[in-house]
Image 1 (cartoon, rainbow, N blue to C red):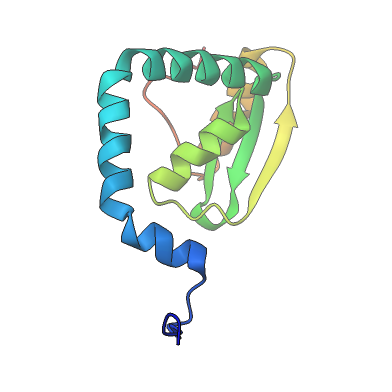
Image 2: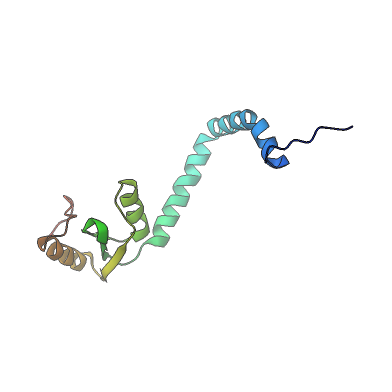
Length: 126
């Protein structure tokens, strides 16, 4: 009477992919090994383009729950780094945007003197 009906809650598409998981993984691994140089070159170009498009004037930002103040020209990238370092980035405020980095560093310095954390060894306060 035909094939038995499978009632496992999966679609045909999901069953097919589960059945061929090892085959797909080995193909993907081989592809990435064979094309490693090209893949890395495309990634470098993409990352560089993205970073250039996201740059803006220096700004001072506050991560409220961490009591952290910092300066950046690429807020999206900087926040992703804070997320990677396990900081609570649920509430971020931009305190000011400046034409020159030195002005942003002056505000950051003032806020650090008031007790906010985030002083970085490479910031050059003059």
